[in-house]
Structures are given as C-alpha cells and as structure tokens.
Image (cartoon, rainbow over all chains, first blue to last red):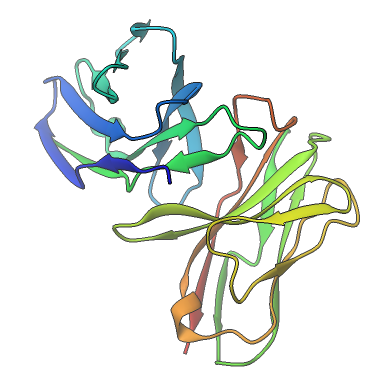
Length: 112
Length: 113
C-alpha cells in the first residue's frame, strides 16, 4: 500500500532556512501536500503541488518535487518562531477513491 | 465563517461506555472523513463518506461506526471504547472527492481508561 515517511523532528535557529523532507512510495500520486498543525489545532493546508510540476514557490515557501526519487521537500525561508509546528506531508493517489495518505509529521522547533 | 466543528473537544471515559463524537460542516461539502492521530504514526483514516448515506471503511475502521444521514453531519460512534482507542481524532471535509483541499476540524482528544 501507500507509504509516506518523514523525519520526526527538526530544530533551526530563527532567521535560518528550514528544509523538511518527505518520501513516498505511490507512483500514481496526483497531488502532494504540506499541511501545518499548530499546537491544539487541526491541520491547515499550507501548500500543494501537482505531480507534473517540479517546483512551486509561494512567498517564503518553496516546494520541490523529485518524482523519479519520490521525494518531496518544503523549504521555509527566514524561519520565524511562528513557524514552530508539526508539518505533515501527504499524497493523493489517482485511483477511483483518490485516497490521501499522510506522513508521520515533522515537528519543527524554531530557536529564537 | 466556513468551518468544521467537532464536539466534544476533550473527553475522558471508561472502557465499554458508548460514546459519540459529533462533526458538522457548514460548507455544503459532499465528502467527509474521520482520522485518528497517534505519535509516530501520523494521521490514519478511520471512515469516509462520499455523500449522504454513502460511507466506507478507511485504514483503521475496527471498533468504530459512522453514519451520514444529513450532508452536514458525520458522527463517529464508539460502541464499546477500549484503551487502544485513546487518541486525537480529526474530522475533515472537502467539496467532493476530487477537490484538492480538505478542511479539518479542531480535533477531539479522547482518553479511554
């Protein structure tokens, strides 16, 4: 079945760039997502990329997709303390049901 | 305000005592889903619903039931809760199954002793 993997923890200093990585196994993915979960809150869609794209940039966020290696990354430029959260990678397959599979989540700690 | 609401937000209960967690969305979404979040396991789907009266099992349906009698509501029922169902539960909805974005509720933290 589908599998999405992430490292569990990342710590960066305020002002540095953060790079959160994700690998997935489903070669039929149509969309790949990054969700952000702040403490005590639900998940919020941060950004997404179509599987036929290599890169997407949105202000401080850059998403890179290497479809050959099934590797997705999220780069946050000029990381701020407000970026501290858990970040979930997710992929959606192209089957009739179009199931979304989430990764384990990466907890980003920003040190002032 | 467009939103997904869940109640209760926190619940402590005992093994075997039936409970229901409610989920409601005000966006006229067709697709709704329940997930549980556990440390190191991410989010796993319990049940989903494509529309009224159409529900199906996700990855971890054992011990749970759902119903979809109205478009806006999708309650999660635990007939006989057990300690391994202690978790953080999220309801989500999207316009339809083809929509790229899911909207998540704030979560319900359930503890079963």
